[in-house]
Image 1 (cartoon, rainbow, N blue to C red):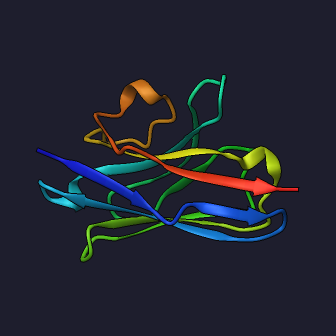
Image 2: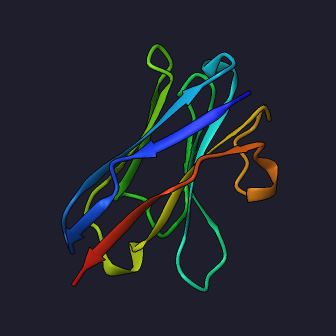
Image 3: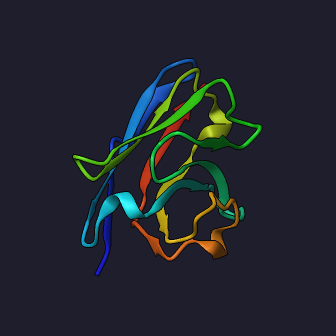
Length: 124
């Protein structure tokens, strides 16, 4: 059984920063590729960022490149999403996901486990 629990969401003004965390329990954390997705009301769930097992490879959606940074601490079984220069369009529920895939997929269907999500609201 793999459980993912996100934290760190909240309300922030445009231009501000937040750091999301995703704590994982269950099987060996380092064997999973991790990703962050987000879903705004009435919109499809979209890929935000992903990170390889080792943390050496990271991938980002074009909309967040240069503003968001994904990282992981395998000793703590935790993956992070540092979000800077936040914009109102970043408002969404942010979800953490894990996959046994050897690549870092960007499609939601390639991820095996999901957290419940944490709300991020950016005011203008």
